[in-house]
Each structure stands twice: as C-alpha cells, then as structure tokens.
Amino acid sequence: MDRNSFQQGIKDGIPIGLGYFAVSFTFGIMAVSGGLSVWQAVLISLTNLTSAGQFAGLGIILAGGSYWEMVLTQLIINLRYCLMSFSLAQKLRRDVPWGHRFGVAFGVTDEIFGISAAQKGKVHPSYNYGAMCVAIPGWTLGTLAGAVSGSVLPVFIMSPLSVAIYGMFLAIIIPPSKKNRSVLLVVIAAMLLGTAFAYVPVLKQISSGFAIIIITILVAGAASCIAPVEEENPA
Amino acid sequence: MNHNIYIYILVMAGVTYLIRMLPLVLSRKEITNRTVRSFLFYVPYACLAAMTFPAILTAPAAEGMLVSVTTAAGVAGFLAALIAAWKEKSLITVALVACAAVFITERIMVLAL
Image 1 (cartoon, rainbow over the protein chains, first blue to last red):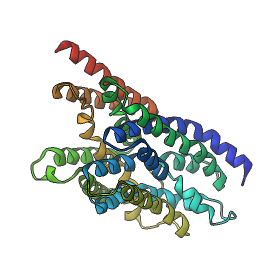
Image 2 (tube, helix red, strand yellow):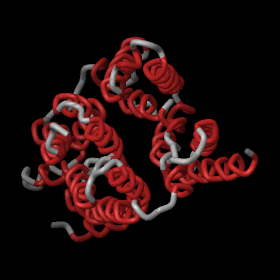
Image 3 (cartoon, rainbow over the protein chains, first blue to last red):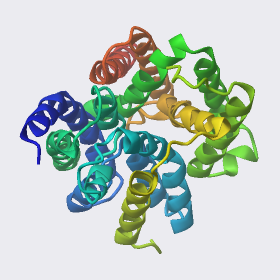
Image 4 (cartoon, chains in turn blue, orange):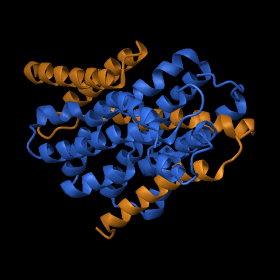
C-alpha cells in the first residue's frame, strides 16, 4: 500500500463520487419504479459499477429479455472498458504484485480511468483504490437513496429526473465531437440510426438492446475503416 | 417472469468484470492494430449516442400527463443538455440543466393547456 497515492486517489475521487451519487439516484428510482426491490437495485450498483451498462441491463430485465441478450448488450456497451484496461495495463507500476490488477479492474470506469490516465508517469494501484473508496460508496448509496425515495417522489419530480442519465451521456460525447470531426459524424450517424430503429417499421421490432449493439458495431466499424485514428489519441 | 433476477445480475456483473479484468491481467503489450484501436476508440461515442437519441425524447413519460406535453419536455431537455454539453459544462451540470428544462416545460405546458 502506498499511502500518498491512496490519499491522492481519495481526493481526486470525491467529485467523482458526488457525480455518481446523482446519477445512480436516478438508477435507483428507475429500478424500483420498474418493479425491482431496493435490495436488488443496490446489489446491481454494487456489483456492476457502471452507468450505461446498468441502465441497458435494467431495460433487459424489465423487458424479460434473454440471458444472451444481456451478455451481448453488456459486452458491447462496456467494450470501451476493454480499451481502457488495455491502456491502464501499460500505466500501472510493474513492481507492484500482479494480483492487484484483479482489484484495480473492478474500478475501471470512464471517470476513474480518466483521472488515473491523467497522472504523470506510472500509477500505483493504491491510487485507484483510493478513488474507488469514494466512487463505489457514492454509486451504491446514491442507488439506495433513489430506490428508497423513488416510490414516494411525486410525478413532477420523477419525470424530469428521467433525462438526467441522457444529459450525462451528452456531456461525455459532445465536447470531443467539437474537437474531432469524425467523432461528430459518429455521434450524428448513431443518433440517426437510433431514430430509424425506433420508428421505421420492421426495424422497430428489434429490441432496443440489440438495436444499440447493431448501431454501435455498424457506426464504429465504418468509422474505423473510413477514418482510422492517428497514433496519438485525437480526442 | 421466466427469468431469475439474480441470474440477470450475475450475468451483468460477470461480463462487466471480465471485460475490465482480462485486458489488465493478460495484456503485457499495447494493441498495435490501427483498425482495432480505432474501432475501440469510436465505440463509446456510437454507443452512448445511440442510447441517448431518440430515447431522451420519450423518457419523461409521467402518468397523467399528455404525450404532447412529455414529448415537448423531452425535446426541451435534449436541446438544453446539448447546449450545456457544447459549452463543456460538467457531467452533473449538464444532467441538472436537462432535468430543469423538462421540469419547466412540463409546468408551462400543463398550465397553458
């Protein structure tokens, strides 16, 4: 354990934990209003620690989708963690026991990856543990608070909260779209295809989980062939 | 429901953890294939964009409110979030701006109709 890294991780993790609380609050509300128990909603957050994957997974649970649909959806939606883990694998100090990688892996989220990638030089796993010590309680307790209050909050509060998660998604994808034309085109194409899968006859028969998988593979695949990224990360 | 909720949760958590863990534990070298790197780079943007739109338009679906009201609120929430995100506001700020736009639109339309 490296005390300085751990404390720095806690410090950098605080804004993340607060942000997680707000978003997972919405997740708790949605899970309970869909028919899950408070305990089940909290268990999902504690074991998954991911926003997009959980919201998509909840949709499949509520729709009674197949387990395979769940596997594929989680695989596609969380595929970005694969890239982050590959990147983090280069960044972690190698003089620290390899077993720590199993622990660090649990906390690979967009935000924790972001702050550890931004550190200078190699990162000690204690830094990630520090951030996880704030982020995981923030995410789990937010879900608990949302799940408990979801059933008592009036409609005029519930309805606006339902767009919070989409607001966060836009906050993640729009700023890079300003700087990178290819990303902008990817975002627009995915939204247009999303609209097609929601409203065009035949296409709209496909469940939303599979539609997202198909759109992601089509758009990211086309973009990687038409506009492969340069060696330096462009965004 | 034919499916067990705890198996769903196990599948979700298991797949998500494996995706995070395997590259960290197994990879000793960086991915060099440019197309694979590019694909992985674009995945989050395509995925999050497809999940957001058009779902955000129909998300504010409160019982007892007209569809025209909630759809207008969804459009307002989308545009407000788009502007806030374009100005590179933080995640929480963008989320709250979207919620506020939905809230205000629903109140105004309920009063107007």
